[in-house]
Image (cartoon, rainbow, N blue to C red; front, side, top):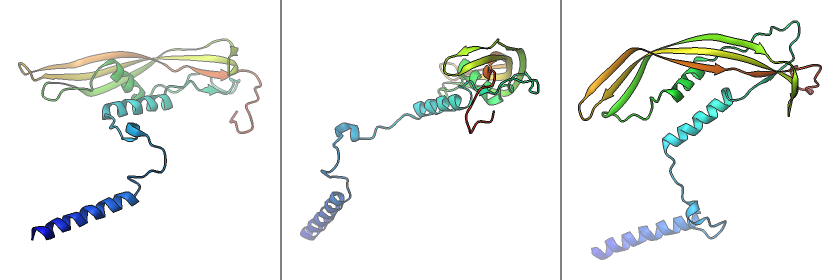
Length: 191
């Protein structure tokens, strides 16, 4: 009886080795990477940080180059900052993430955002490297974030702190360029 069990296990192991040899898991073809070929898990924290950096760069991190200002176009600035942009700047200032559950947590609730334009002016034309003749249009916003904050501490003595009238002031610049003069922008341009 033991012989049959041993032979059955040996047959299963032999079939497994044969399948592994023909699936590409163990092969002598291709480059040998050594320990670099072993995948290393990435922390979700670092992955989220990289995604946030890309998100910010894609949406808010670039200064656009707009067409020249003419008599028909208004010389007012771009749209005010979005609530997403203001809240992302708020999270850079106010550390809310990275809490320790049951030991120390921070909650931000009832968020209200007020945006005020505090400056809107255009610099005189000048030569900008890699752009050409352009004017820099400055638009500055003062964003006030009103919120209620709850801090819970669970050790050594559990207690809760509440601040219902918390506020942070964030200044956001929405600077962008305007081309100057009769600039040849290419065949597929909107200007």
